[in-house]
Amino acid sequence: MSDDATQSGWEKSAENWIRCVDRGDRNREFLLDQAMLDLVGEAKGIKALDVGCGEGRFCRILAKRGAQITGLEPTTHLIETARERDPAGSYIQGRGEELPFEDDSFDLVIAYLVLVDIPDFRSAIKEMARVVRSGGRILVANVNPFASTRATAWYRNENGEKLHVAVEDYYEEKAIPLKWSGIEIINYHRSLEAYMSAFLGEGLILRQYLEPRPTAEAVELSPEMLDEYRVPLFHVMLWARPEVSGSVTSASSEPGKEIESVKMADGVVQPYVESKGSVRDPREATHSEIAAVVERIVKVEGPATIRNVIDRYRCSFGLGSFRGSTREAVDNGISRAVRTGLVEVIETDDSDKSGNVLDIPGAPNVVLRERGPRALEDIPIAELAALAIHLRLAETDGETAHRRILEFYGFKRLTLGVTDRLNRAMSEVTRLST
Image 1 (cartoon, helix red, strand yellow):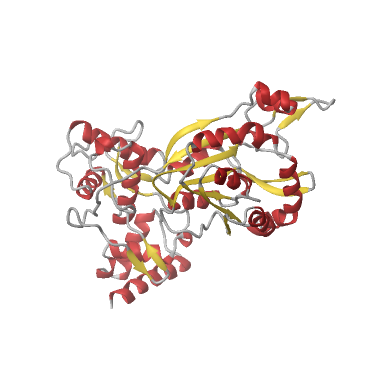
Image 2 (cartoon, helix red, strand yellow):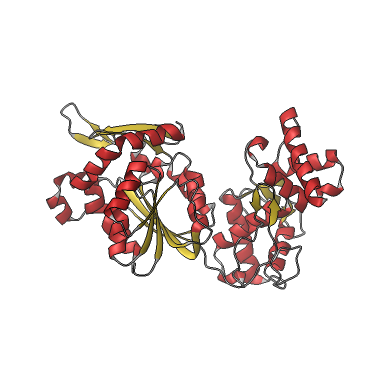
């Protein structure tokens, strides 16, 4: 289903959606609002972004609690209504997949029942992780994936009585057309694994995972909530971006000196050091923080043995030799990078005694590389050129350069289209070198 079809449904349904919200949404009012506000905590003074804010309801709730809130919404009528209802607020028309904000702009990013509306949810999660500051949080309310595989979660008998929640084709990512109260929109089903992998892949840390259950008072006020008392149709997650301090360097840089980004014709390609600092002692870093650094090292500097990765990591942090629990922490971080799909292993040698073999159950592998896209055509020319610069391929002949790039991404052969893209990338490297 296309982005245009998704947005068209919301544009046509905006007025009816506003009417439904104004009448009252029991799931938000009796179930999710309190869980979300509890995890926000003290709102006064925080700089927050509500992605997919609709007509601004939750923005206004947080603003009353003292938050400096910005609402983002792609639907024209909804964002106009938000501005009308809160003239003093900040409301911007835009898409979650392309947030119009600088890196590290917000203390808190909120996605309140919006990920199911976004076709490219992985890009949206990547963007949320980009705009939240170091030490900041991402708060998500979402439909439980086991309840989103079909348009109607509940299976009913011939009398219309709800029996149980039905699950169909759980692992298939798919568009689900929905219709109710004059609203006709498209939601998207994805597995819980798909969502969790997207967040973990950004180096985020899960702090809270809730499946809110209505209180007895809520059921008394809204008897329909008895269904949510039986089955949790929603979950709420609080993710944190690791807080960093100090300075980080590339293994090819001098200790203590920050490395510079590689500037390309169509933008800036960031190196593996994306923050302005890092945890100085690996023993103080979480495994996911270390895994994120490992991913960046392998992405920029290419395939490496475990020992190479550890040496690069040590140099990046200006550390001496690794011993005991420090080495164990880094091993665990590398293992996590492999298990969560940030990097992949490409060679095996059980007899290796050099320290390269990593103790990953079932996979004593020795070489890591970035887990790249399935097709080279999906990789931006700027990224190919940046890789060529870091691998110093401008100093080699064309055939060698092509082979190194193909090896890095795990591709087996050249086609005319692939050759053309690689030639364009090498031309960009040559242009920048002159």
